Image 1 (cartoon, rainbow, N blue to C red):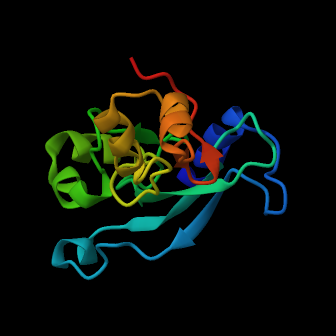
Image 2: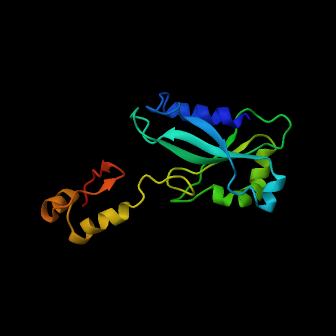
Image 3: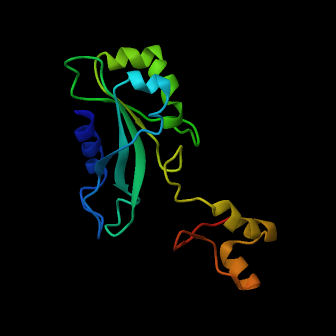
Length: 173
């Protein structure tokens, strides 16, 4: 249970203000583990859910993202107060999809003998939402015409590509 307050503190470091019209963020929301039916998970002490954080901590009115989290509980009767936070390196690498291998890893087992081990899927990885989803399809006509988004709109009479409801502001070289 120590890891949940630590996750909230980590989130608060990034944005101490609530997102307008929503519950306070960051926060942890408990939920089912995506691997709960797996035989290996039946013998593990794992809590799952979502870390809810603002998409853009600089804008109070921005929407919140729900990032999948799995907390591998320590095997110690008196675990350290500070959990180990595992954040994968490399592009697009989801963490929760590799939980079985991580649980069985000798390094993970040594850490769990002392403290909780927290797995987090970052935005756009694993099952976490991707705010840039579909961007490639939106930019394909721009690249194919070899135009900047502004030139594309002027010549082709189409709107510049957007990400969600926000216009894409980037220069293509």
